Length: 114
Image (tube, rainbow, N blue to C red):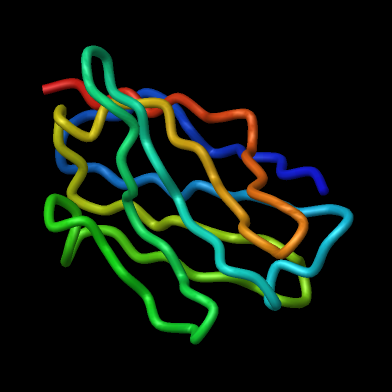
């Protein structure tokens, strides 16, 4: 299983970005998936995830601004991030959990300037 994340970049506060995570070696629609982030000086935290029952959870800090989704045909997971804030600056990682293990993408850097 491999996860390839992309879409990070440098934006100003209030702008939007969409992160993508394309999976190979597995079907993204059949597994629990999510986005996590690691900010300087902080522990890794969950941003959003789609559970095995297809319900979605969001961190309180991003509720109403971020949306997680997946395209089964493209085997890709997305994170639409709107109204970005400087505190959203972090490396974002996609994650997939299945019976064979817990898999991570390589991370994509999001920097939000004020």
